[in-house]
Image (tube, rainbow, N blue to C red):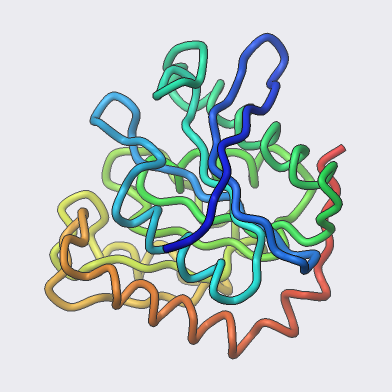
Length: 216
């Protein structure tokens, strides 16, 4: 079990509820949860699997509730407000002394991350999408071609069609991993997510460590 402490992050006139695991390295990751209106929160099996993996690799981890979820104030804003939440959380990590900030977004969280990547010049040191629901949200992968590192999806994912995704990410540098027998929710497949992510971080970690970010 990952040791985490509850923190509250200011975002203009809102407060963001988060759980943070601290490590001694300069690397940190923010982990974004699925759709708030469909029960998504930071207390999610996929979010927790990602946190476990990064914590085991000596990262500071920060998972949080988007506005209107849990103890986070405010209300759902169709992705626009949630993208501001992501930037606020990144600034919090940077102000905590971290120079390398990784991004991990699951489902709706991936779409919010995509908007942040498109709207801002800053690149995350590393970015991971799990089941980006491109069947339902307007992902523009062409705008992410140099910003996206790894995508994980299931071959039975009803919101992220794997074969269509293969076509849509052509021309990007993203590595795609497809988990056999997994649908959008990954129940019983969490260990496979962890194994894929861990291998990718170990293989390419030195490259990513060179990328530092600035969200000031």
